[in-house]
View 1 (cartoon, protein in one colour):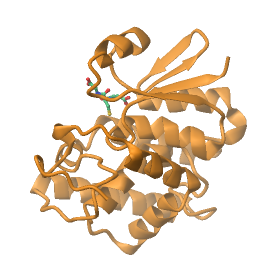
View 2 (cartoon, protein in one colour):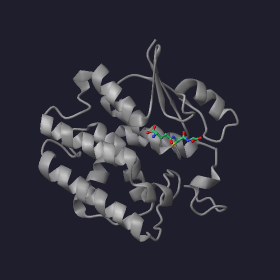
View 3 (tube, protein in one colour):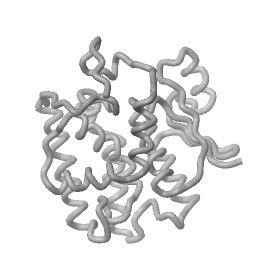
Length: 224
Ligand SMILES: N[C@@H](CCC(=O)N[C@@H](CS)C(=O)NCC(=O)O)C(=O)O
């Protein structure tokens, strides 16, 4: 039996996007099941699979891995040839710090700019704490590109798990027309040019579930 990833709505579930994107860009085969976050049996189904009752969860035979970052770590160990972390120890430490900062933080940004793939690009006012998150991410991306990015267009040159962790941030910055400097804009372009990006986006746009809490202009739903 191969890998099976259980995820939430592609339009809304940013934590689901991270391991899905890592798997796709790395070219690791997997099956997927999408369970809408508002499905009546969501908690019951996910409770049995992840313990937390949340997505994503990766199932590999009798191994169940929940938490997006732990899934990426598992993939990096199971498939060392795809190099989901940088080979160099200093770059790898930096990539892990950057990925952990995303996993543990940026709550104002995540709350104010929920991932919403089908919303046409429209700016939102940014409260100071959200603007501070944006400036921190922009500085971090710029630092990664400058110090470690010579070998390619991603944070550490070639695509790594750190990029997978920031994929939904790229989506948010694009959707909410967040102003960023040229280095961050080029990084975002490289991420959005990946075939995996188009695949996720196209599937998201076909979904019919609407979740009020992730629609910033509720009850108006702007859809492409
Ligand atoms: N820290 C977790 C966060 C998982 C999470 O919050 N998932 C959301 C969807 S994006 C979820 O399952 N929400 C449903 C719920 O809490 O009932 C991770 O990194 O995987």
